[in-house]
Length: 376
Image: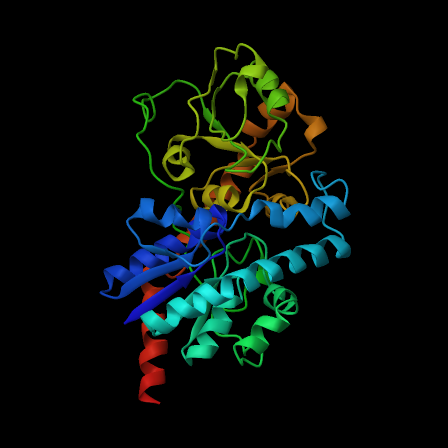
């Protein structure tokens, strides 16, 4: 069986699909990713990708969001107008991807298309070929209704390829535990297996320490979005060790770091966080989901409207503290680290995640979806 994975050309949208792709390949199926740009991160995981939009630069496509709206890095929910602009941008992105995706699919002839929830182009492609489509969520918060909002801006693409779109929804895979985001439970629940890339790890990582080891990360972002300077200053007065796993920041401007703060550069969170006691971050989906899967208490300062929903969900569930950036202080970090309720709840959620179906089980369901269709 041939399985075509389609993702937006954004690293954070592609990484969550890799464990399922590994499971499909381990089951003996052919796997190919169709994406562009940052989607090539799958190559680091031993998977192949065809570039369906050579030269596509996603960054400038998001400029209308910044031109039309203010305060995008404030810790708040997005407005209806902002959500409409985001849907419009992803509609334009999908429309750019459709021709290359269809051309590849018509050559390769997949038996099923698995696509991330931000690219209904995958569902269009599957409908064009007459094969099943499976949606895979990539956010902690629910993506319910996202497919329809984005597809509303793809009318010309549906018309061009003679698909009465959007086609009926197929199965949807969600990787957020039900107790954290109940609204996400509309399809197949799957255990989140953290993967955020690979690298050569420093010798000191994993060595036994006498104090808690706290990760500080703002994910793999396109800009500086978090209160890093304030966190560093406060951390210097806390009886714990801190690791800055930060990408895209010029740390030299923060001066000499406190002796209990390391700055080794980016370390994939799937490698770093298993050695940590807790994590401070911006509310990104990958960071939040990895922390939940590993049972770590979280201290979240939402890095803008795109991260507010995840930060709020973590706070509601009690697996960590959702705080405003201007509340950063040594006492806040000390009290958070010493709060056993956060640790106990995080452990409960980790057990909940571990009880969900594995990627291998979901791979079997997808196989059954295709073989059942063939028999019918």
